[in-house]
Length: 410
Ligand code: KG4
Ligand code: ZN
Image (tube, rainbow, N blue to C red; front, top):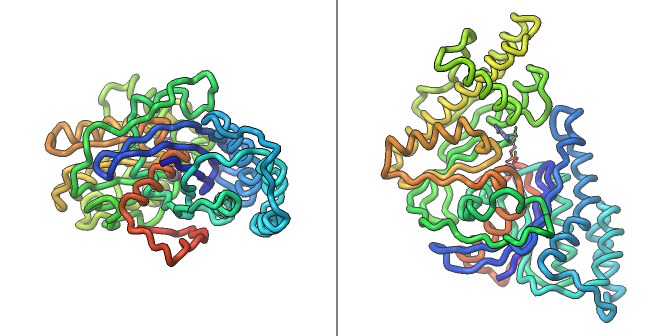
């Protein structure tokens, strides 16, 4: 089955075509084409994502990325025979009325190419920034109308879970940067199957949650942050230290420096480990963030060394809380598998801490996505669409409700 994946929930515009085969225990994926544009540089000056700008950028960039993806996949062949009726033009104009750049580019490009043999469109419908989500959804609706293929609405967070099913070896290095020279497009399943019950820890810019997975498609949220998401805390603390957005990689860089030069010594600036010993599986990072704020105010001017030490202490505090809470949940639910997804798992220190945790508990299998699939991308959305296709009985009587759901949860 060939699936077109579309992701526009935040500040990454991403499109891919994935070929998916196998059943729910042995799914296998290969990426035929993939293109991604990050808006980081545009949002940097605001210290976070600015929704109206994100919407405009998605609207501008979808068609060029889509074109690249089609061409990389061997599609996108021009065809003078293909006609688009006036009625279709009017319908597409109506669907894309709020995305003028996309509307114009869509109508200039799509009528000129042959319909590819794509079977379905998987698109993120939430959670995320609603104006941004709508761009991807409306693009999917216009394509679905033109090509008469179904849409699979995907929960972005399910995408982060499913991202671990894609083999790491093959997602290495270049594949996210659409490089026509990259012949290595094969992607396959992660060899070892996921054993249930599984627990997923999702750590991103908008989320920090623990999800119990009884089987594919059966998700229960057992704990979440009561205030800031862990990625958000990384970003805000980075800002306090005068570091650019997104803060995660910057904090990680400074923390690593400090660890390197300061073997095993505790930092002179102890920070709290919020909710470390509470009985529930919830998290809280806003107190930790505020503690950093007070510390920076107290120190007045921050030397490079201070920044490094604070970054290390902050990263240690976050890691300790994440590992302790996850360990407790694994034991409580007798989970056999631990899946960790979301942008923050690009963090090397946090990865290592979880690797150490499962070394102590060898019966638990640990799954991370490749680094390329840790942050937002369209491949995970296409793969989640396929898993949904395998696990949900299609209801032919109802067309899926296609609305952006900013707060979509499990
Ligand atoms: O999953 P993601 O790409 O987007 C959301 O769905 O939110 O996650 C983005 C978040 C940002 O807050 C960013 O600072 C964080 O992931 N992040 C990291 C690292 N790389 C990205 N946090 C800690 N360490 C990193 N190396
Ligand atoms: Zn994400």
